[in-house]
Image (cartoon, rainbow over all chains, first blue to last red; front, side, top):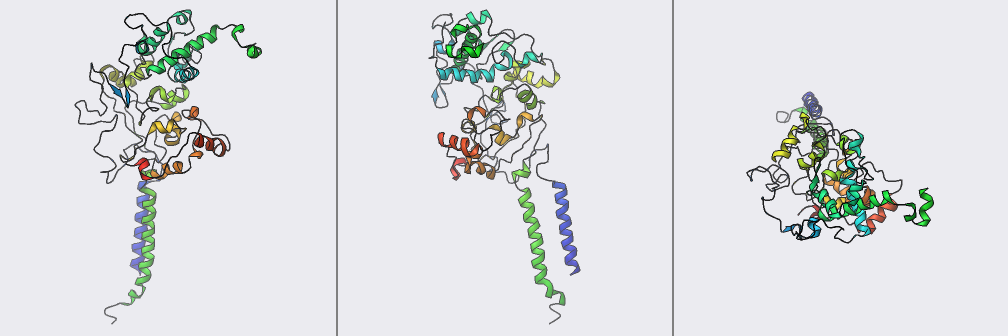
Amino acid sequence: MRYFFVALFGFLLLALTVFGIAGRRGTDFRKPPLEIFDDMVRQAKLRPQVPNSFFSDGRSSQAYVVGTVAQRIGDQPNQAWQGTAQNTGLVPGTTNYVAAIPVPVTAALLERGRERYNISCVPCHGPVGDGNGITKKIGAMPVVASLLDKNAVTIPDGLVFHIIGQGKAPNMQGYASTIQINDRWAIVAYVRALQRARYATLEEVPAAERAMMK
Amino acid sequence: MSDIFPKWTNKLPAMVIVGGLVVGGVVTAGITYYMTPKYARVGYKPVQPVAFSHAIHADQLGMDCRYCHNGVEKSWYSNVPSASTCMNCHNQVLKDDPKLALVRESAATGKTIPWVQIHKTPDYVYFNHSVHVNRGVSCVHCHGQVNKMEEVRHSKSLGMAFCLDCHRNPAEKIRPNDQVFNLDWQAPEGFAKSGGAKLVKDWNVHPGESCSVCHR
C-alpha cells in the first residue's frame, strides 16, 4: 500500500514538473511552434510567398519572366497590356495624355475612388489633398505636392493617371503594382472631386445646403 | 492459498481504480490543455528580420491595412508587401537607417527579406481572406489588435473550434464592410441582434459547417 502512494505521489510530481516546464497557455515565445506528426499539416505543395527549393531563386512566388505579359489574371483576360487610353492614359497612337477620364464616371466610381484614395494616397497627400498628410505632419517628408495647386488642377486626367501608376520624380514612386487600372481612374475622379470642392463657389452649392456652409 | 495471493492484493482493485482515475484524469487534462493551438500557437512572437512595428504604421500613422496588404480583398491569401512598397516612403523617411538595410537591399536587388510567418493554418485548411474581408469579417477577429502590436503576436488559436464559433453564429462577429479594416471598431450595444443579423440576411451569408467548406 505504501508503494502505491509513493508511486502516485511520484506521478503527480512528474505532472507538476511537466506543467512547470510547459507553462500556461498564451505565454509569449520566440521559437517556432512544435508540430508533431506534421505530414498532413505541412504538405509538399506550393504556397505563396514562402521559401521553396524547387526554383533556383528559392522562392515559391515567381515574378513574371522579363518581357512577357500575363494573358489572364485569375479567370479574367488581362487587357492591361493593350495600348488603349484606359490602360495608358494616352490618346492611342500619340504621346498626348487624354483630357478626360476614358471610363464612365459614376457615383460608384467616385465612391471607390474615395476608398482607394484613403488607403493609398492619404498618408502623404492628406484627406483633402492639400499635401498635409501624416508624413508631413511628423516631419518625415518635407515636401509633399498639394493636389489642389493650380498646376495639379490644370493637368489632363491622363497625366494624373500616369503619375499614380508611374510616380513623379524625385520622390513619389509609382503605384502601378498595388493599384489596379480601374482603381487608378477612380482615384483620378475622386481627386478631381476634391479639387472641385476646393475651388467651388457658394453659388455652386445647392441652395438647400448653402446655410450649412456659412 | 496465501502463498499465491498475499494479503495486500485484497486492495488491488481499489488501487487500480483510484490509480487509473488519477493517472487517466491528469493525462487527459494535460492533453486537453496542451495538445491544441491555444497552447501550441497562441503567444508565438518570433523575432523578425526587420523590426517592423504595426503599432507605429497602422495606429500612430493611421495607415490602412491595405496600403501594404493590398491583395487581401482579391486573393485567398493576404500578401506580405514587396520591399518596393516600403520604399514608397522609406526612400525619404529614415533613408539611411541601418535597421532598414535589408529592405533597401531587397528593393534594389530583389533579394527576399526572410520574414517569419506567424499565422499558419494546416495545409489541409483552405481559408480564403477575400471572402471574409468582403463580407464584414474584420482582420481583428483572427489576428487580434495588430494595430497595437509592436511585434506581431499570434493572439487567436485559429483552431477548428475557433472557426466554427463564427461559422455557426456569424451575426455575432459580422460588421459593416467599411469597418472591416478599422481594428478599433466596437459593435454598438445589441448590434449582433439587429445590424449583424441584417447584414447576414442582406449578404446572404451562409458560412457552412460541412467539411468541404474548409477542407477538400
